[in-house]
Image (tube, rainbow, N blue to C red; front, side):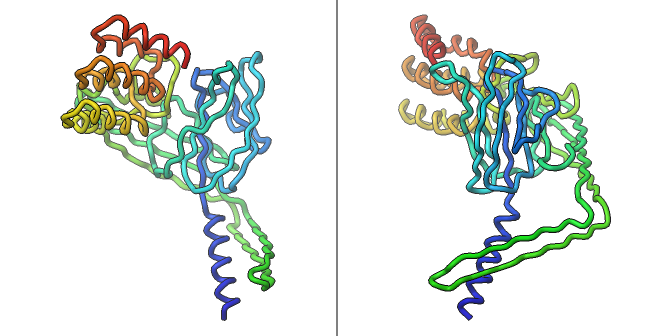
Length: 324
């Protein structure tokens, strides 16, 4: 009976691990286009600045980044996954000016989430889904996004064989698992998803528009470097501002602001709005330095200078950004 319990537990653990799903996002902080290669297979046919690979089910993959700019060396990285989720990596230059790949976040997978701006999405090991997205954007109203995805998957007579052997407390345990999936052909699934987001005229300039399929523009007219994948929704940002403004002490305001922004992405105009909640110049400067690493439109960061009272603060911030 004890051996049967161990075998049952082992079987369930193996099956749960086999069903685990991982998504991998790679994006260039400076907007350099690249090809993403996973286990020797090129994922994007054309160079992109932001590539998301969905449907990974192993816990480790060998990756390579090949830049469109031939002056940049190829980067190799082993991607390991501990828990199911969205793993996001940033391709950037370190303090020595060397290109590196650094992980910046691991979050749960959100089904039917809207795509990040200018992001190329591919399902690993299967044809890329054909996706059509239509977004209407009444400013101060509701953003309606309808996404229709058609994916062809499956392979006739799929066979999965798994052999497991181990020793548990002196007991040799062996298991052979065979799964035969005779579908007689491919399967095709089509899903339509609608997303609604409320925007306001004080939301820091975050406007969801869609000039072409699968592309969402968060800051109209902006085409500079991107510092993080997706800014906060306007409603969430307004709630965050209210939470910060409700605190009586300056130190508490600063602490809460860092806590909120540290786990989110915002735009430069929103950084300025948060800075205007502080009374002291030192708090504004400290927050501006902290928020730079969590700002989507880094090329617009000059806008935060309007929140300062002294020119010395502007110079201090510029020196910080130059050495960041």
